[in-house]
Length: 163
Length: 417
Image (cartoon, rainbow over all chains, first blue to last red; front, side, top):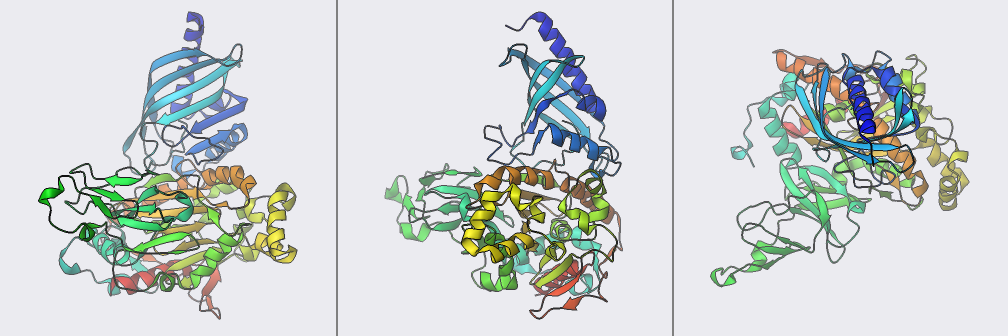
């Protein structure tokens, strides 16, 4: 059973993580990850083994660091300038994690991204996130974030921001 | 398909010159229609690989220009390509992008076809007097080279081997890296939407000049095999090669001194793979295959042998295109698959460290071309130093535009015809 206190604390964490991503606060966002991180945007529903099939994005901790390092070079043209973004999060459901102290939350999102570096069009990304955390950092550290896009099995535009 | 009898007012002889091309070629709807007709509906187009449909009834749907097709494995294990339309009233037979079927049943009036494309059932057949055999699914000309399956919607014209020309050597090089001599495209395809004309994909994917600029963030953040190819102009040993027929390559191997640089590992890191290839070829040949590595080559018009990725270019209107990619697994070397998957996502696709930036540059180019009236794009770099090799290939410094000229030279021969 997830307690009300846990739900509140995890909700605060989810909103903070979303704000860091929206505002491309790379260091703050990266600091939310634990060492065994999996950051995954599969194709479609993601009902496949990422060790056998290709994903849009499948990062372990080291590759997250590489991703951030590249974004911070000042030459990552797909994010120069960074996309202004805001995401709305809803339909949260909370679950106990596999191990003691671990928690899982699933939620829907709508993310508006202004492709300011190229077409100046606003792109709407929608989907469902599965986020797994354990105690650490200021409150939690996340070790699993899977983002299943509604249009994840269609062609998608560049996704080099933090989703 | 489209306009009457293919009349076009566009003067391709004027717009495509040896050292420059006109920007309208990327933004003109008439040009796009002409390309669909002359390149994609009359010429050979890459559809898929046999390994994608290993079992009877497996299929994938793809586009050949504007035409949806189904590539399917029949009961006789033959690979066939069908136009994705019912022969009755033209309804799309198969809306799914992949799967396994024992029959196609049209949802409109229930006409049913078997996996060899034969019409087998017409409901309420009492009112239908024509022979079923006149209504089998249409099959365009189909051929393959080393499992890479191509279609040509025109009944007449050159063979696939004539279209591929000398570039078969590039397919041989890719397949030769597999201990079993075949590649295995079973990882699925990721699809990346570009908001730019499709020709920017073949142009950019074998452009050796942009690497140090478009990909400066990659070069600064990531240690890769490309580091040796972004130094001073005088020290770069890679070359670009125009293979003829619009096929173009960046050949990094002339700068590779050691085996497996292209995979980013030493032989000790992948011992089973090295052993398997050595067992097949002997040590000397295996080591040479492992030094040279895979091709980095665009095969006209829509296939990219992108080192350890296979890539499809799909036009999507004059101002859009989709770049498909899948890692090139090697039959007989499954232990490489995890590495190849992660490298594929790192290099290609919407979240990659490389082509996400290419897509942005392409979109900016497209926007600028759409603004202009008198846009000429210069392609003269290297005209004074490229050399013709014995087999007819034109070779030049990796940063030269020999490849772009090779693409457009072939484009012109098709488009003025």
